[in-house]
Image 1: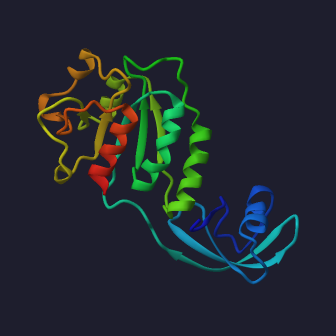
Image 2 (image 1 turned 90 degrees about the horizontal axis):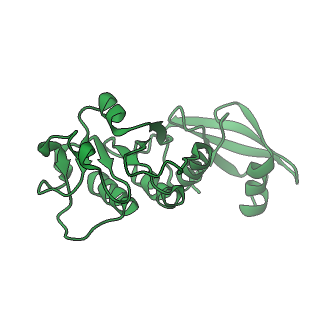
Length: 222
C-alpha cells in the first residue's frame, strides 16, 4: 500500500481509530516515530505524517509535510458502460482504476437487465482500496444515466465499441467510448452513431463486456 486514504488528510493532527488503526497497528505493525503517507484524494497532495502516539485503540499523527504529487493516466478516458452483472463489474473495477480510467458512466442499455442495480458505495470502497495500492492520486468518477440517448446528449463525441473495420487507434485521442453489455447493442442503439464513430478490435473473437472494457482501457491508456 503506497499511502493511506483519510478524508481529513492534510490536517495538522489526526487520530486514527477503527479499521485505519487496525491496519497501522496489526497489519503493518508500525511504531512511534514511523512515517506514514496519507491522501484525501481531492487536493492532489501527498501528506507525510509522523506517528507520535500508538496504543491498542488509537494512533496519533502529526503532519510533517504536504507536497503536490499527482499520479494519473497521461490522457483522460471516460467509459460509458452498459450495465452488466454488478459482480462482474466489481471484479474488473480495480484493474480499470489501476490503468487510469478517469470516469465510468453506467448506462441502462436495451439489453441490460433492469434487475441489476449498481451499488455505488460498494464500488467506491473498492476504488479506495485500489487507489491506495496503485498510488493513484484522484478518485475515479462514477455516475449513472437511464439510457444511451441521454448519455449521447451529454457526450455527443462518443465512440461506440462494436464490430467494425475501423480499429481502435490510440493515436486518435479518443476521450469517450461506449461499451455494450452481454448480447451487444440493439440495432436502434447502433443507429445513434455514424459509421465513423463505431470502432472495434482486429480479432475474430467475441469478447465479454468486462473483457472488452479492460481491452479498451489498456489499448488507449497504456
